[in-house]
Length: 72
Length: 152
Image: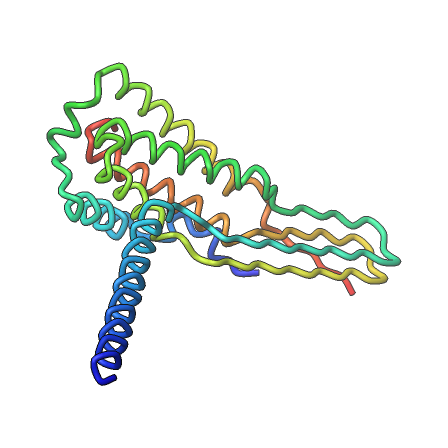
């Protein structure tokens, strides 16, 4: 199997950032207006949610041990 | 006689034009339907086969695909939720969420076959790379989105 999954980041943050920015811009989204839609409580909830998901992804990536032994 | 023929011709032409119009309408309808229905479809197929024969002390560690798929759905939901609250459940919001997911929509097929025959003390680790890539990319999109919205 490929070892690419061991890389900490497959796509650079810049590419992702560009993708998100372009998508929002293309659809005429007003970022300032979008920001104002979130209450402080919702911001905290999303912060917790994202941190929790990041932890889950992190542990999923680290889960399997990498050493392989093969005998014939 | 000649008049009859002309009528026939014009009716035929009219009918033809009507059919063409119908075809065009059908086509336009199809586009509308497609825009409404097309959502995030990630067609993934993962086949894994580990065959152990006449062996002892073999340890197999494979990706927990179910956990990975749940994580993937969780990330997609989180992205959709952030978009829905901030941009709204309008066509604009739906389009943003759809476009973000669509970047990672691909038909993925992952087939692994491992055969262990007449062996001792073997440890195998298999990884479903496609799922791992998708999960990481979706997390990156979610983080980029919430950073833009001053959540993180």
